[in-house]
Amino acid sequence: MKIKLSLAICLILFVSITTSVAQDVKLPESLKDNSTILPVKGRMGMQINQVITFGDFKTSKIKKGWTKSTKVTSSTEVLFASKTASVSKASQKFSFTQFGPGNMEAEVACLGELSQADIELIKNIFALGIDFKNCFSGSIEIVTDSTTWEFIILDPDSKPDTEASSGFIRNGNDELIELFAITELEGKKIPKFLQGAVQGYEFRLNGKPIGAVSLYNKGNVIFKDNISDTQKLVIASLSTALLVRTDLNDQ
Image (cartoon, rainbow, N blue to C red; front, side, top):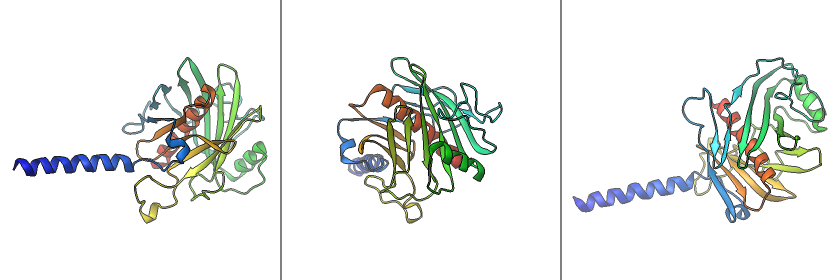
């Protein structure tokens, strides 16, 4: 009996270990070394007064829906540095403050599920000449230096072309971080009906990976160790936004 019990315990431990490994999105080799992986807390359970945390990063309570006018003009609702946007209809609207280590702070506002007219407005703001049916967009304002980063992810609910960029974050100084969809899981075969679906995003600066966010299960946020604190805050802010967006879609 003792031998059978020991074998059962070993089997349970083995399954637990292999299952936890299988829950990671597949990362490029350069992100597997010299990187920090931060498990996400706050996605499961009640979503009222939701707060997302990972490592030293934490949000304010996520504000879902805006009670003020949809004309985006106030400091807490500004979406784009280049233009003031008046959005007529969006079924996804939420905002939050992203806190980081060393008193770092960013105000984040997000829009999704836009009408076709609003999609045309977003195309003009981002000067995009390509067609897309849906997008997720918004802004990240760094409080310490008043720098605003704009972001857009194209057709986030469609199966992506993994070779092409899915979107980007940019600021007024022409700094650009591209997003590439991750569709594979490490050590786990995805069921056919989920194959090709977005499991997370990789962030690339000048073609090199500097971070990632896993949207799978509870989620992870990954930082390359040598990137700047501002870059970490920007990646953290957009990672939170993508995690919250995914949760809203699942509800």
